[in-house]
Amino acid sequence: MEALNEFVNQLPELSGVFLLMLSTFLIGYLSAHYLQKVKYSKLLKKVKRQATSAVNNAKIADIETIFTEIKPKIIEVVKETQSNKQEIATSFKSPQEIAETARTSYLTYTKSKPELNFDNFGYASQDEKDDLTKINGIGPYIEQRLNEIGIYNYDQISRFTDEDIRVLTELIDFFPGRIERDSWIAQAQSLKHY
Image (cartoon, rainbow, N blue to C red; front, side, top):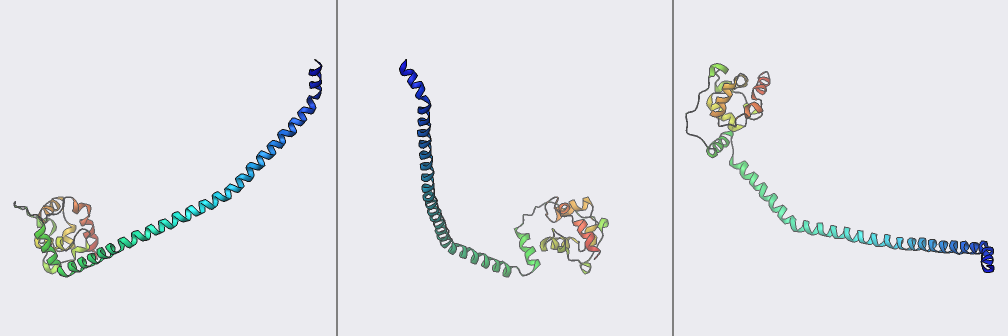
C-alpha cells in the first residue's frame, strides 16, 4: 500500500511530465509534417509545370504534324471546288439552258395533265412579264415552266385559288405543298404593288 500511496502522491508530477512529453511529440510531429509538405509541394508544383509544358508542347507538335499532313489535301479540295465552280459557271450561260438541263434530268410522267382555269386568275402575255424569280421559291427553271404554261406576272399569281395551286403543282412537277409553304400568293400581292 505504501507503494500505491507514493504513486498517487507522484501522480501530479508524472502527469506534468507526461503532458510535457506529449506536447513535445506533437510539436515535433506537426512541424515535421508541415516542413515535409512545404518541401514536397514545391517539388510537386515543379513536376506539374514540367508535365503540363511537355503535354502542351506535344499537343502543339501533334497539331502541327496533323496540319502539315492535311494541308496538301485541303489545297487539293479547294482547287477542285474552284474548278467545279468555274465549270458550272461556264457550262450554264442562260436561265433557259439551266431550265432545259433541269428538265431533262427530272422524271416526267406520261399521264394526261390537268388544265388551268385562266378565268380564275386572268390571262397575260409575254409583254406583261414580271420577274417571277423575286418570289421566294421560284428559280429560273420554275419561272420558265410558269411562262410556258401562260403565267407571266405577279397579278396572276396573287389570284390563285387552292384548285389552281393543285393543278399548277402537277403541271410544273413541283413538290406538293411547296407553293403554300413559300407563300407565293402573299409575296406576289406585295410585289405587284411596286
